[in-house]
Each structure stands twice: as structure tokens, then as C-alpha cells.
Amino acid sequence: MQDETRAGLDGDGHDHGELPPETAQSGAPQTAGGQLRAAREARGLDLSQVAAETRIPQRHLENIEAGEYGNLPSRTYAIGFARSYARMLDLDERSILDQVRAELAQDETQGRAAPAKFEPGDPARVPSGKLAWLGALAAVLLLVGGFAFYRTYFSPGLGPAPLAEETQVAAAETGAAPDAPATPAIDPNAEVVFTSEMPDTWVKFYDASGAELYQAQMGEGESFTIPRDAEGPQVWTGRPYALAITVGGRPVPKLSEEDEIVRDVPVSAEALLTRGQAGSAAPGATPSPATSSGPTPAGTPIATQTGT
Image 1: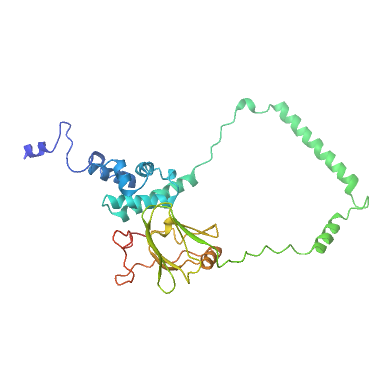
Image 2: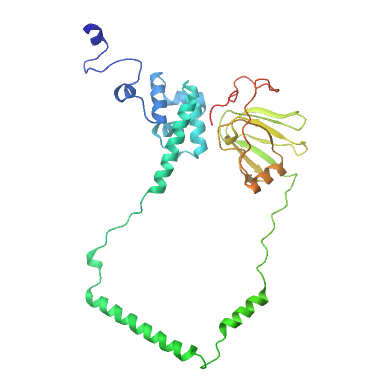
């Protein structure tokens, strides 16, 4: 029994197993980046291999492992990249994303709670007692002079000073303030462009009759322009947070900032501009049903909803 125990220990008394050094010595990593790094090292992979497999720049992977989410372009990138990284390593995506969101919230809270820093006063810069008395005397003289000036020029009966009445009359003659400028009219024929901000973004566009307009696994930076003659164009995607939208060259809010599947969402110029002006919430996610029409191609990352 003792021999078996010694066989599992090295000269320093550390247990050897499948867990990486960080996990074996200090337990499971507490950060999402630590868990991803430990899983990667356990599989004998380096960051360049992960970058090639996930199509995520290596510098972003380094920031994720270090928990430096502030160095990423936005919160959306932090969540999307962490999910792709976890999926590549066959980890629990929901657990990793929950941890990433918790760390992002903690960073935001700490940033708001950071106290202002004040330098302690230098005693050598404090005015002497003599200077303080001179300052007080100057203040008294200034008050006396101001009072005398007021009595001379503004006392009742000493001169015409119905300034307040004249001001009120002028305000009445001016009338109410001009109306706020009207909201620009919506151009129903404005060009609508969707641009993927992340790699491997599956998306499908179709018109009101269900006829397909476009379906692809969009790469980072790839764009699609809605045909202007499309009747009631709609979209189906599992990465609404990864699609930047412009209408007539003007950015509008994304369909959603959450990790959810959206389907049958109107994406005409009028629908997107009206939605943006109203400031309404993103459409609710519609999970893809098992009997849905329009099969999802192999390799599509949105077969099931991965998190909330």
C-alpha cells in the first residue's frame, strides 16, 4: 500500500495525475481564463494552435487567459471568444460564460467604486496668521464697498431701475421656446448592411415568403447587404451580438447583446430604424425547434441555445 502511494508521488511529495500543475497544487482555477489555460495545457496545446483552430487572434486569447477583458474590443468579444475557446476544448460553455460575466461585472463594480485620490496638504503652503487677517480685512472692505455702490445706484427713488419688469415683458413678447426639431423621416429604401464582428457567424436571411436571400458562415469583417427589392426581409442567427448593422450608413442597435437564437426578426430599413428610435429591447430569442423548416447546415454553431 505504501509503495503504491509513493508511486503516485515525486521527490517533493506532489501527487501526479491528469490535472495540470496549476490545478494539482492549488485546486481548480478560480477564473475562467485559468480554467481555459489549464484545459489547454492538459491537452498539450499552445496558444498558436488554439488561435488557428478557433480563428481568434492569439493576443485576444492571451488577454482572456489573463482575465484582461479590458484589452478586448468590447464585452461582446469577451463573451464570444471565451465561448468559442471553451467549445474547442470541450468544456462546459455555460459554466465558462457565467464565470466570464461575473468577472466582467466585478471589474465594472470595482471601476465605479475606486475612491478619488487626494494629496495631503503641504503645511509649508498654508498661509500664515498675518496673511489670513489681511485676507479677512480685504473681504470686509469689499463687502462695504459693494453695499455703498448698491445704495448709490439701486436704492428706491434714486434712479430708474425697473429692470425686472422689462425683463418679464421681453420674455412674454418673445413667446414660448421653439419646438424641438422633428425626427428625420424614415427612408424605407435605405441600404441595410449586416457585418460580422466575429469569425464563424452563421446567419440566414429570407423574405416574407420564406425564400432564401443569403445563408453563410460569415467570417470576421464579412458583410451582406439586404436587397432593396426584398419583401419583408427577416433574419435567423445564433449570434445576434456579433452582427453590426447600418441603415443608410448610420449605425443602429444590434438585434441583441445576449447569447441567444433570434429568428423571424424583421430587418427592413423601416423596421430597424423604428426599433432603434423607440429604444425598444431586442426581440426575444426563439429556440430552434426540432421540427423547424430550413435545416441548419453541418457545423452550424447554433443548433441549440448555449446560454443566456
